[in-house]
Image 1: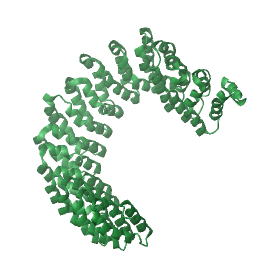
Image 2 (image 1 turned 180 degrees about the horizontal axis):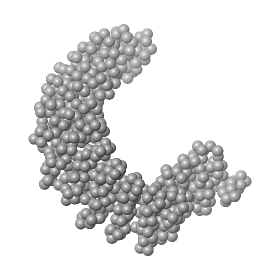
Image 3 (image 1 turned 90 degrees about the vertical axis):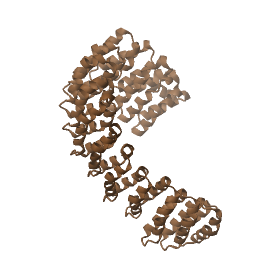
Image 4 (image 1 turned 135 degrees about the horizontal axis):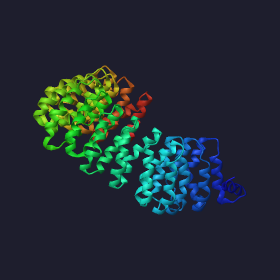
Amino acid sequence: QTKLDDSKMAGAEGDDSLYPIAVLIDELRNEDVQLRLNSIKKLSTIALALGVERTRTELLPFLTDTIYDEDEVLLALAEQLGSFTVLVGGPEFVHNLLPPLESLATVEETVVRDKAVESLRKISQEHSPVDLEVHFVPLVKRLASGDWFTSRTSACGLFSVCYPRVSSTVKAEIRQHFRTLCSDDTPMVRRAAASKLGEFAKVLELDYVKSDIIPLFTALASDEQDSVRLLAVEAGVSIATLLPQEDLEALVMPTLRQAAEDKSWRVRYMVADKFSELQKAVGPEITKTDLVPAFQNLLKDCEAEVRAAAANKVKVFCENLPEDSRETIIMTHILPCVKELVSDTNQHVKSALASVIMGLSTILGKDNTVEHLLPLFLVQLKDECPEVRLNIISNLDCVNEVIGIRQLSQSLLPAIVELAEDAKWRVRLAIIEYMPLLAGQLGVEFFDEKLNSLCMAWLIDHVFAIREAATCNLMKLVEKFGAEWAQNTIVPKVLGMANDSNYLHRMTTLFCINALSGVCGQEITTKHMLPVVLKMSTDQVANVRFNVARCLQKIGPVLDSSALQAEVKPVLEKLATDQDMDVKYFALEAISVLALA
């Protein structure tokens, strides 16, 4: 029987101060997980009610003793305890939170352990250097030498937070424990150690980075488990940023070279994924001698995932090459590999490349772009995978800046038209979304000549999502090209659809007017659009009639008051007596919104 049980009995005898605790005990022992979860989430309120003294002496021991529960309850508890410092009386008492968190850091469920470690890291900052040595470091040591791998993996995340603020003897012990975990028998522990190696290296003194961390890095990077090796790669990038240039070649590069050619694709993938960070860390000389050949190999890797990860980095890698030799390296080493990737068998690789390849044009300049890159863009625009084509279209602007519109349009336009008429509606939809962007890049004459008819055709597409997007697209085009352009090219075509035999097309006219009235302004709306809307109020299809009411409500604010009174009001009043419920409803709503009652 714990102290809290006594207080529960006291609570039953009417001592008010103990009441919250009594309820908590009941809830924490309840069958229902949800109730237990709720009471854990209210812990801070309960701790406040108890005061700091009793939180330390009763609540925390009670929680420490009752840690056998569903994972979600434990997760909530681990999270709550991370912000409990104030509730136990501030930094000088913060070590009272360590026992329950220590138990949570050893449970089987990873998510709970990770949360407990996160909370421990958080409260470690609130320990004084003395408390760290007396309370926190012993906890880390206990975890690091625990029988179960769960506690040893948790320990890995705690070394770096206590190392900077302890005495040199304790520092030596911490380094020793970390070394031991890096060669633990259990792969899970070595994996945890490898994932924290870079972070631990950052808080060590440079001499120890060289004497302790480098051997550990070398060992982990040649571990028998690929999951450990790939985490060592990530650590290697962090370690490279810490070392002076002259030590990199001897200490880090041999291991990274070996990782770039690892027999496991996951490790090579990691190298490709971290390539730009690596490039920044090792500087221009090693980039030229080592990274360029390594990058070529990754772009030619036998695994698609690796090629895709490398393809993603093409632009950034080229941008960060040393300027004096950038163009030469790209043209002789990188571009040949890129040319092969354009017709790769894997669509993810092609798509990754398409999302960055346009960026090369700004680096290589006009002549190289026209000669070497344009043919590649064309191949990609005609690719059977829609993502590849869209990645090219959405990045056209940077090529346009380099080579100009004429060149671009002659080569790329046919491919765009083909996509606009694609059988898959999602492909058509995606192209519509790029239309304003394309129009802006291509200019008005060009647009009228080549693309206008497409935009109109979309308005009568059989898929509603396309018609809706096409309406929105028209509005964006008018914003770009102006009201006068709209009056000459768009408005007549839109209004012509009001006489279409298909009621869906007649409704599209109304949707277009809704979208265009604001950007076209009062004159065009009153003179050209309003008469068409009013005429449609006698349509035999109720859906069209109630959309007339909604349309009048939308364009009302654009019209002047005389038109509202003389023309709009009588039509809405007539619609308000319509036999269809919805027509009536929207007409009355429009009358009240436009204040015509």
